[in-house]
Length: 95
Image (tube, rainbow, N blue to C red; front, side):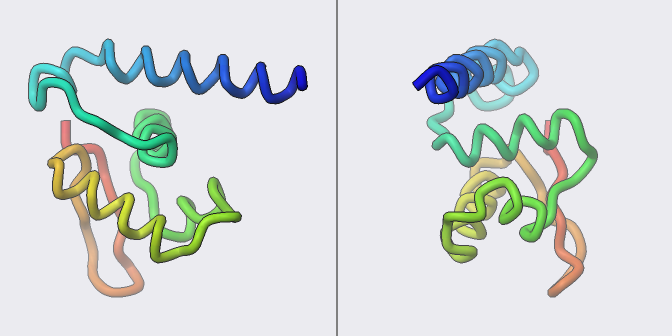
């Protein structure tokens, strides 16, 4: 139970950090993101890019198509931008 509580606290902190991110808020206003999308943004704030494969490693229990839709939704919301082609596709922060 303690591990779950710690994880929820960590996720809550991530949500607050992202909601406080002025560049993001100024660009888009309030944006609704699911937990996986928030984790992708947090990952991109530390790393320069994320691939579908990286994202699948963060969420191995989710279907790859679901995860690809999450990244596409972030791109549609202009939070990230897609670079590359076919198997070389990766995403970068767009802020």
